[in-house]
Every structure is written in structure tokens, then in C-alpha cells.
Amino acid sequence: LREQQAEVMEQVDAAEAELKSVRSMREEVGQQRHELEIKLTTLASEANSVAERVRDEYGLDIATIAVNRPDDTITDEQARVHLSEQKEKLKSFGAVNLLALEEYEEASEREKFLREQLEDLRTAKDDLKSTINKINHTARVLFTETFEKARANFKKLFIELFSGGEADIRLVDPDDPLESAIDIFARPRGKKVLSITMMSGGERALTAIALLFSLYLVKPSPFCILDEIDAPLDDANCRRFLRILRTFSAQTQFIIITHNKITMEAADNLYGVTMEQPGISQLVAVRFNQAEEDELDRDPSRLLDETSAMAAGSDNGDHPSESEQSSAEEPSEEDATEPASEAAADDDIDERHSLVPDSVAERMNSDVGVGRESDDDPSQ
Image (cartoon, rainbow, N blue to C red; front, side, top):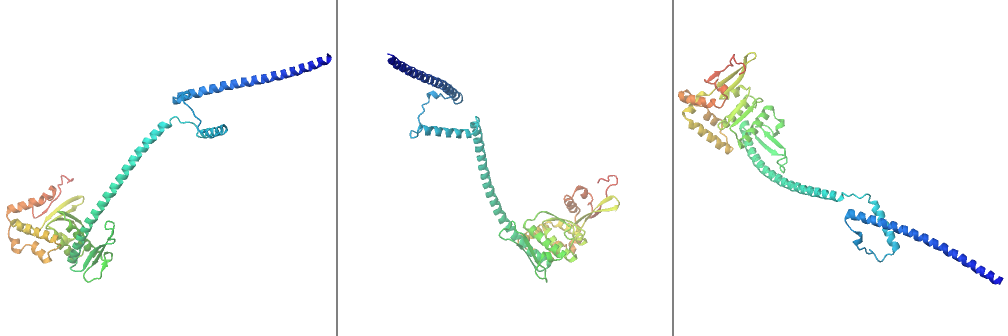
């Protein structure tokens, strides 16, 4: 019995040890179950928080969206690794800019506006280039025509002023006439071909006068003012210059500022300022060629005929000779001595006075008149 009791006790002890082990395992399983319940509760809370945030920010309900496995060929472990990599990439993007959409729209509108402006600028640039090309073409044609006319006139006037010789003007770069420099070549009679830079001052001045009047022939004007143009000229060259001037005076009124006595003698009207007393200026007005004016008053058609002849001669590039000019401009002795009618003289005086200021016209009541400022009004 004792042996059986001992065996039974051993079995009881083994059963109690086994029971103790089972209880310990139950406690461990209960602990694991409790931890899983806590984790499940936490995940559910996080899921609810994510669902609420998605609903608030994007207006979507996650519960209503069916999610399928994106790739059935990968395992769960590969899917976890891929998800982890995507999360790292998402973190590297930085903070989310909630105004990115609005900023994108503003930038898109700005880019559209700038693109339109750029297109307008390109169109305007093309139009300007086309206009510039047209202007350059027209200017090149007009310049070439004017240059050739002035060149022909210059050759003729140079020969007339120098009583021989030859002259020419040439473009340094004929392919680009608008930007090209111009060389002036002149050879007075009895001299070698020279550049104008190697000529004397008087020859330069006379050559410049020939070039000036050659341009003047292309496009004349009713008035011309010359300031000290005869200063470098000697007496002989000054008379040549005056001979050309008389040719043009038929259709142009010249106003010359000069100190040359020969030029003064050739003038129809002379105006000057002198100072007989210190600090008091006096205006002097002198009128010449009264006899020739009287003759023109008697026969006004003569001036018209001479003007027409001069205009026709300038259009053809021809100029009357010195003898022809003298016969056309200097009245005969018989005509010069014939008295003019008083009414014609008064009309001629009024007509000439209309070309000058009233203060000057008042001083020209006679053939030769000298006017003085009033002592009571020094401001005049």
C-alpha cells in the first residue's frame, strides 16, 4: 500500500507541476492577449485619427474607398520594405505647402502673361527690322540719286569757280553709302591731282563753296544766310564767288555776314552797326543799285524772264558765263540815266521794306540813309 501510495503521490506531484506549468502558460497567454488588445485599441484610435484628418483636409471617407493590393507578385515582406522606402521618400519632401495650388495658379498666369509679352516683343522686333530695312533701302536710293546730282553740279561749279581744273567727290565705301565717308578730290588749273587737305586756305574755301552750291542746286531755298564765307578768299577768288552768287540771286535772297569790301560793294542793301559814341550803338542801312531797280520798275517782265532762264539753267546744270551775267545784271548806261516814276519807286521801296524789320525799314526812306537810336530811348 505504501508503495502504491508513493506512486500515487508521485503522480499527484507530476500533475500539480503540470498544472502549475499550464497556469503559468495561461497567465503568459493572457498577458499577450492583453497587450494585443491594447495595441489593437491604439491602432484603431490612430486609424480613426487618420480617417478624420483625411476627411477634414481632403473631404474623403477612407471606409468607402476600396483598396486593392497594388502588386500581387510581391510578398508581404517585400511590400513592407517598399512601404518603408516610400515613407522615407515622403519625409525627404519636407513640410507640405498647403498654398502650393494657389501659388501654382498665380505662377501659371504670370508665365502666360510673360509669354504673350515676349511674343509681342518678337513681333514688334520683326516689324522694326522690316521698317528699318525699308527706310535704309529708300534712304540709300535717295542718297545715291542726290549724291550723283551733287557730284555733277560740283564738277561744273568747280570748273567755273577755278576757271578750269577738275574735281570729284567719291564714296570711300560704295557698298554702304549711308555709313561711308566721302573723299573730296580737287585739281585747280595747272596743278596736280590733290586731296583737299593739301590745298591752301583760299582754295579749300572756294572748293567748299562749290560743294555748298552744288548741294544747293539739288534742293534750293528762297533764303540763304552765309556767315564769313568769303573770309579766306583773296580779291580774285572773291570776285569769282560773287559771280556765282549773282547767278543764284535771281531765285534766292542771300544774307551775307562779311567784312570784305568787295562783297559789300556787290550787295544791294547793306546793314551795319557802329558806335560813334562809347556805349551807344547806331544802325546804318545803305541801299545800292537804285538805277537798276528803277529799270526793273519800268519793265518788271525782265526780272521774270531772267529768273526763268536762271531756273532752267540750274535744272540743266548750266550756268551763264561771266559776260552773260554782266549783261543780265548790269543796266545799260541809257537805262541807268533814265529817271523812274515816283509811284514805281515808292512801291519798290515798300516791297523791299517788307523783307526787313519795321525798325530797320524806318531807316531806309532814302537811297542812302543812316539811322541813329533815340537818345530818349536807349533800349532801342
